[in-house]
Image 1 (tube, rainbow, N blue to C red):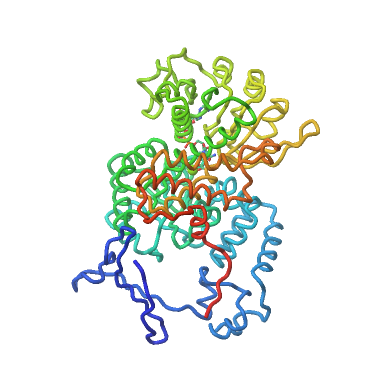
Image 2: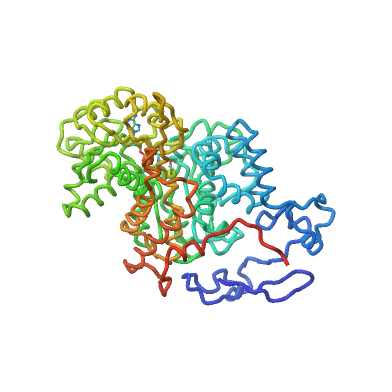
Length: 591
Ligand SMILES: NC(=O)C1=CN([C@@H]2O[C@H](COP(=O)(O)OP(=O)(O)OC[C@H]3O[C@@H](n4cnc5c(N)ncnc54)[C@H](OP(=O)(O)O)[C@@H]3O)[C@@H](O)[C@H]2O)C=CC1
Ligand SMILES: CC(=O)C(=O)O
Ligand SMILES: [Mg+2]
């Protein structure tokens, strides 16, 4: 719904919130102000121009010492600020100096969150300009620790908490959120937070962090982003017994109770924000994640980052790596440790791409890919007891109990870790990979760093410097035998911000696998000879906004091709259009 300035009443500017035509699929009069009868309740929305202290306390508009003399006069700020007027660059320099002084990553995280709550544009300026340095602070690995301690560091709500207590009232809860033009929701139920397990409502750090990346990396306006945590309880005994735990102190609801709440949420989202709000599922446990994606994939605009975003980023890294390891994608043999969301999601997209290249049936391509779970290699003799998403990977093969045996017998060229368990790529496993391959491709994707299947140093040392390595959480360059080795970050953060932007700019109404392939293709193409020379299979994060704009354009182009785009006519130059839509963190001048 559009809003226009209507007039000034009693010193407050009043906005006309009457419904306009909404191409965005939002229903007219969504808040029911017009049609409510006298006995029905409505939301008393008012908008006023902030000035004085309330302007300084509004993170969206606060500029701190960067308010000009003229603005200080016009907005009743005289005396509320010291006399100096700083530039945004100087503010950035000062804050980076102070953040760099913290030695403990969690302190840096808290400082960044404080900044986000104080001065949003400055927060994004820091994050965009110092992305390599600050990504590990607001995202993995530090966000993992922040979630573990979220109860203690919680200050102000950064998103919506929807618990079983709100059952039957979720639409009202959504209306409590101050922003109306929401375009992306990242939602978790906190059951599988990174590789750290069930953190209940403390998982809120994940949607908050992911959406910060939507803005910083993908250019989606902060006001269009809504972090949500669904609280159905937790099975984490430590949290249940923690007096500072901020969530519902009960065991997780399951079955009908769980799915009814999720259904109410999904319906309320559509009712409140229309057809074209993108709902990104994040860090649900796999026993719900696949079902939710399948259930809402045909009725809502949904995307599971752990299954689909991860698949797209890993396929890109593997395709790019072919320049270094040789062969075509179908020439390679893959072995996964971990057969959950990430593992089977990646495996399926790789098989899909192989089949597109070879024109062979998907079942044939799947035969090049093997997965090991906590019970060993997934083979046909286990089929009856396997979760449904593992069944396509139950090949006719003798049972194999351990990863090491599987590496020795299957002789994969690519080893992928998606187990959530650290240190599982042992010296013997990496040595076996190095014995079978001149250049083994090793991807340790589990997060945070403590759960990484191996470190960069281990991968290079144990393979005698021959491995191409990438990981979910970043590792510093490693020196081995006098040579410096660089490893890439194989993390869905390369994909979802640009992917989401592509959906928004095209007005896509559904996510299609070909859009994931389009994102992947774009990312792989942006790896240059300069990166290859360093052994990198992903482009530099410092260019992430350009990378995201290109991904967005490719995804949007695919949405138009598939007839899923509703923003018509199609912009001619989609890259330029994507760039022009991106949020800028530079301060605006106030009248
Ligand atoms: N880099 C990135 O961008 C991303 C990384 N991840 C990371 O991947 C990890 C897994 O996530 P996800 O797939 O969603 O989790 P899931 O819980 O869906 O899957 C985990 C899988 O690992 C298996 N597993 C667990 N322990 C072992 C073990 N000791 N040996 C062998 N297999 C084991 C499980 O086996 P079983 O089924 O038998 O229980 C299961 O198949 C997490 O750490 C997450 O942070 C996830 C998404 C993106
Ligand atoms: C990166 C991510 O989405 C995860 O580890 O779950
Ligand atoms: Mg995730």
